[in-house]
Image (cartoon, rainbow, N blue to C red; front, side, top):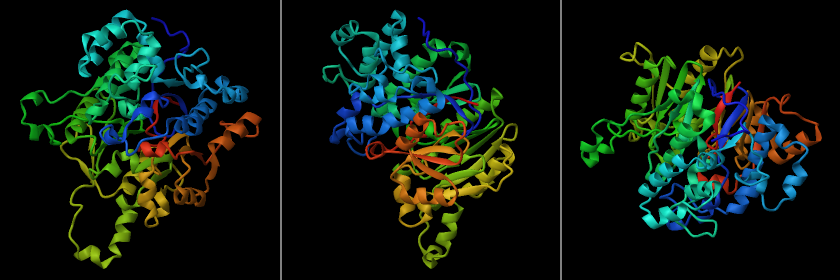
Length: 483
């Protein structure tokens, strides 16, 4: 099994904003167009989406941007030809004209490549057919399918002729959740919802069997389950103290020796504890901060309430931060009303060797300021940009459509959605240039701007359909290498 187009396979991520060099993504596949209203929420979508619009008018711009920043030779000077092809073959793994970059890598391409290996194919087909309860006849039928087409079937749940075999994996576009690179290790995650079980199996096979990860197989980390979970009563299995679930949106590698883990509706305290134990034992990091947030759909992961923009700049939701607390204290009713939040939001920092003496941090801004100054050595004032400019009701409205979920392509250059107007106003006030992905791509193509010289810029993606899926540009990426 050989993947000749991959020229380098270095894996290393130590911060959230260093220049991005390689990442995993997954373009919207035909399974997204098969999500039905009655199953949308079971499959973790808020609504059904229009697949063609999501692809052509929105996600394709994301891929173009990534290529211009990470692998310009694949796209520069070819834009007219790419846009003229109505089949979109440039974006589809397994086609002759697929962009096939070794820096912007679609997991579907890697999956298709490992399925060319007969041993891997038999093992993975048996595993998928087992969890999806397929008949033996179906399993034999899949034996005759081309490797790249089989990869599409495993992801989309359907054949090329649109016959559905099992449920699609619409959430695979959110690559952040399947794994996270911590320095030169990869932590494989354990999804909280059964709708994502197949994703974790596909990810396991890709990371353990694809040649580009061969040199780091001993550095692939898996979270151990509770040893006796199968003996626990059902009600205890669901408790935070016994279940073992963790998703990548709750893990941030903010500094070379400092990891953040969120405990949310998707990531349990038990899993956070297991990860901390494993990383400290292996000396991969020496500081882990656990951020417990309310278990609410709108605060799905910690990267839905804050992300880093620059060494000294963060975007966050004011109502869960110090500024939010201060604004509530101005309201007399706050003092006398019922206390509904309890200890739903809490920050504890653990230092290797002193795990029994965690440091409690009062609020999010104090934590992020400390990271910028002491972990990253920022010499400029630490600044915060708030969702919706921290104006009611825009803070919560725009956080719901991922105003805080931004991917840094380099320090100070981020990608986010175009629909969050008040947040964009806040970025403008903070000195950032706001430019649409389409305008920036044209500037790159004409040579009037270049990714290397770009500073303090917010690049907006069209987002009418993408935002229905409840994830932003940070969710849609799994960085493998940052400078």
